[in-house]
Amino acid sequence: MDLKAFDKVVVPARLGIYDSSISFLHSQVALKQHALDKRDSLYQDFIRFQKAFSNLPLDEYMKEGDTYRRRRFNEMLLRDEGECISLTLKPSRGFYQAATVNGYSGGINRVYQPLEPSTLSNPFLHQLIVDMYLLLPAERRGISRLWDIGIHLYRITAQPHVPGHPVPEGPHRDGHEFTSITLVNRHNVEGGESLFCDPTSTVRLRHTLKQPLETALFDDAQGLHDVTPIYCQDPARDGYRDVCGFSLNPVME
Image 1 (cartoon, rainbow, N blue to C red):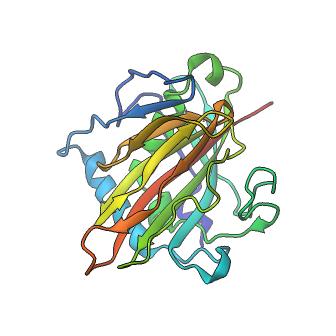
Image 2 (cartoon, rainbow, N blue to C red):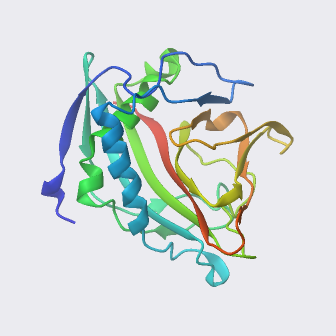
């Protein structure tokens, strides 16, 4: 990838996709519906963003030869400059989680292909990052002007009589300060219910992201999360669930 295609962008420090109302249920998760007008140019950028999920490479770190997950990964550094927020692309590197955090594929440095240049430079992606940051509790956001943003694009596929597993590791924490999950698209699938649990895996909240741009933003330390398998709604056709996930971690200066 040519990093010159995208290096840095400055975005006004205001919400552009969601409204400002926010409530963390069980001090763990906030659910948001978008407030974006389909006539807005940002919505047209979202349509282009959706198309990027048709070109995600296979996740080569799946076990037992499973091929139901495709993904890309990048990181950006967010700097809160008051009236504006800058996003700077960080050099590509592997994605690491300790085995104690991710028992399925943790403990190794996973190297994923980066987002395509047209996706990295998409204004919708930039605004989505800014919105997720601005929706964090103000007292938590204020601990640093710098935040590491991990960008994860996922497509989970289902085939007739072969489900896809969005979270093969089961109930878990990600090991981040905050995590967001935004539904980008669902096609011919049922299931994919998000479960938010207490530390003993007892489910506190169940919610299925059904509409594009529906988002769950959660405080990772407050409990575990999981997603149920997806199945083909029409058993004669394949299906998929596309999600954009962010990890948000403060950088102490």
